[in-house]
Image (cartoon, rainbow over all chains, first blue to last red; front, side, top):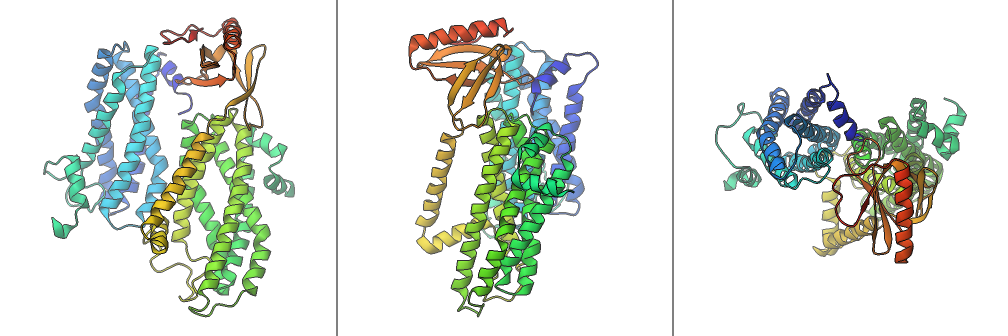
Length: 203
Length: 348
């Protein structure tokens, strides 16, 4: 957070693997956040949600990595695959750290509601705020690597956030009660939100 | 813990500023701050509940310090992350100490006012069902005002402490407002959860409300403003808050009031700042003239992003001369030639 340029310098030194350390940091953060999210429903969710979040974040990073490399290359960036992965790992780990920092606040507000919809909305706000800051860091890393701003990174960031939001729907239930490891019914995240915010009697 | 340490915590003297800035030996400071917070808020919480009943007073003595300690605990991680993201360059333990020191000052002010608050509580008409509801409202309003005033003083002291820790006043102000926002939101919700503090005379005395976790402080404010002013109430509150945000935003980046080019640094003083901050000439990346102002882009070691400051100059030729002067000094100090800087900026 304070000296990201030092991480870039470290990546160029032989034997150093900052991507591995950053990935481990992200996974640790997701376990903590998963426990906080699962505390709303408790039970089996306490084991399942942290694992689902780790899986979800990894899948998001893997799904979006090729497009980050291609988008930035098309925009004229010249960084290597390794440097691109470092930029992505830095952004993703910052998202994790921010979510951990926001977790006590979301937990506090989660105690005043029984509605999974409200709780879900609170977590989504935290996720979008963290993802925005994370994408901003990726954009700065790309800029530092190339000596100029790379046009496609912000647009890619929007796509990354949408993929993350879709992942929260794909891996459902995250906030609600455990009713199977995941739902097989396919659904777009906006459709899921609309359904979650509609009272059961009106469905 | 010595008496001198407690005194130093309360007065936030030069020794304490140096100690926090040094970042060493802060655990005793954290302990002393927590101690002052518990004692001061405990005394005031006791005075708050004294009007309703002794049980309410005892519960207030426990709940008020708990509220502040819980606020500090729940926002600790966010304080550290925010200070990092806002480029404050302070260690996590320094951020936590600054936050807790401000709360200790708040606690000491509340503790000093506790005897007066207790005196007022025992002098007011005793609780007598619905008849004494207005009294409880007046008492609550008075306590909220005292808490607000103590909070403002604590924030003013925190500002001084952050100015001592963070070189650039613009960064220290951003950190201050970010912390105030998070502490305010979390503290408000905790005050709702831990209610009652004064006690409702129409309800039996209770340490916590039966449905303490139900609803939130913000829903209660919304309902109250709707009850008082109809739907215009929340709109008025929103407009006031928007006004506050606009005023804060306008003061987040105070302009440079004075600057001086020294041997290897550019010394700057922002309007309202207590100290000047220094930009190493070797860190300057570009200089340009925009609307009669000289814009200096610089980069801290380890940072990916440039920061910029604008030096006031009304005369265009004067600005151009200053640009040349800074550019020459920065080149001499080893400012590197940045690739691809767009616009009229002079890359070094």
